[in-house]
Length: 105
Image 1 (cartoon, rainbow, N blue to C red):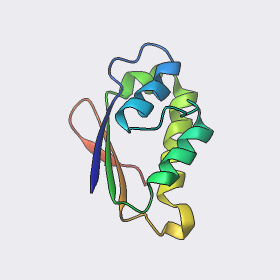
Image 2 (cartoon, rainbow, N blue to C red):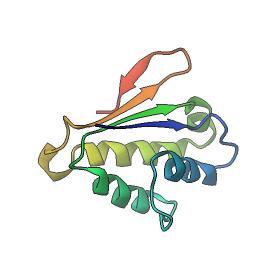
Image 3 (tube, rainbow, N blue to C red):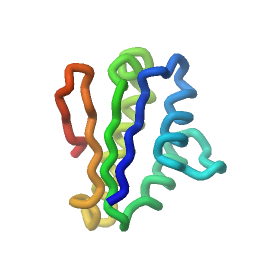
């Protein structure tokens, strides 16, 4: 299983959300830095079991709610792609600042 930790704690500007995703999820150099590119790269990951933890997102969610909601929507959409074929092997966890964990379903 491929394991990833995505840390948004140092994000100051909206554009950095996609820079962090690219870096921490090992996306290719041609990653476009938008939700369409996120969809493309996440669906490329399907097939290999993946466990992704998202940290430090709470401030990003407050400051850039629309973009953050779009990112979460793409993670949800990828999890349920292809009639849920990969839903049990594509796990995305939101790790809150207080340590609680919430799976994106």
